Amino acid sequence: MQRRVKSPSRLAVSWPALLAAAGSWGLSLLTTAALVAVGWLGHSTHWTFGLGGTHGGGHGAHGQAATAEPRDGQPGGHGQPEGQADGSVRFTSRDALERTGIELVPVEQRAMVSEVVVNGVVAYDERRIAQLSTRVPGSIWRVERHLGDHVRKGDVLLVIDSQDVGQAKADFLNALVVHESRREQLAILEEVRGAVMGRQLREARAALRESRNHLVNAEQSLVNLGFDVSIADYEPLDDEARAARIRTIGLPAGVVAGLDADRLTSNLLPLYAPFDGVVVGREAVVGEVVEAAKPIFEVADVSTMMLVLNVSKEDAARVAIGQPVRFRPDGSADEYESVITWISTEVNEETRTLQVRAEVRNVPEPVAAVGGLRANTYGSGRIEVERRGTAVVVPKQSVQWDGSRWVVFVPAGDAVFMPRAVQPGVQQGDLVEIVAVAADGPPLTEVVAAGSHVLKSQVLLERMERGEL
Image (cartoon, rainbow, N blue to C red; front, side, top):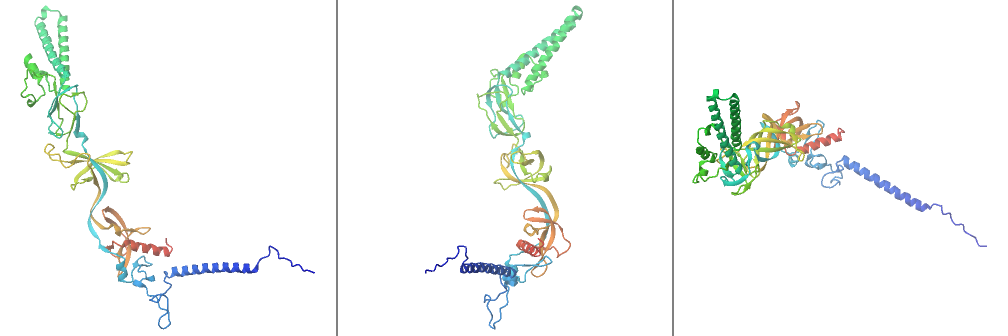
């Protein structure tokens, strides 16, 4: 009889496999625990594990463990400074101190100036630049000045030939004749007052007043064109003298020199320079037809230029009218001094900067030279917002923020440095004013400049280890 062997159930657990899995898990847990222990021990011993010497953790000749020899006299042998409970930083050897690159500098006393650095551009003074045009249409008869010429107030720049000018002169002479005729008629009627009717006298007086108004209007028309005309100057003259005088009125002798006065047109109108300056724009050619109010000449007084400076919105509240300004054009070694004369009431919509202006004297005599400042030249400026006569100053790198206050590090013994709380003030370049110093601590005669960040880092590390941060 054949015996049948019963097969084991599919859910039955293989004990060898279970033991192998348990062994693998245990090994993983043991490895993890070992790594944690090594990390804790390394952290507590600065990863030196208390070993020193040259044997890397071996034993000395007598079978005893070699004691740790911290390099540079520092815990852990890394040459790092050691923070103290009182906030000071100590180096246990001079070699370690020298390797950190720490430098001591003396505290100075000097004048301090707080300045705002801005960008700017040179521009013409808007009050002393003019775009000149004629008041009547015509053609250019003669050009007297050219681009770059220096001119005086009243100099003739060009002469226009305009029919409107000739008509205005003729109207003035005619009105003068009519007025004189009406005046003579009234004088005759006054002499025979008893033989004429009162109505005739009244009409003669009204006609005289009317002619007087027409004459004044004609005179004013010539004055509006720029002529120096007076009725009193022409009344004593006869008709020929009047015509000769008004024909060349306003023209300097140099312009009409060599010309036949009898053949010279009476349509000529000169264009004058309104002030001393330089011709910076010219659109005029002899024979060219010009329209009224079209710019032909541009004259600028370059003796005074305008600095247009752009102040950032962060510094806008610090600037004020009257503050000194120093401006240096790009590519120039010259520096120009001035004061702020105008501050805009709005911030530029595109640049988001505040515009301020300052006037700069360019040349002592505008006709003698152009000067060093030229319009549309970019440059940089410095606005003086605050000045201290005598201040205690230290290098900017000496002042450090330790998380709660500004401090400087001062020597407090051999290779020991103590932080002293300070209040910084005006900053000028690489120097900072010290407004106030905490009462306790070593005297503030020397401070750490280069390397002060190393001391600050050690102070912060010590505070973190004590749980203060």
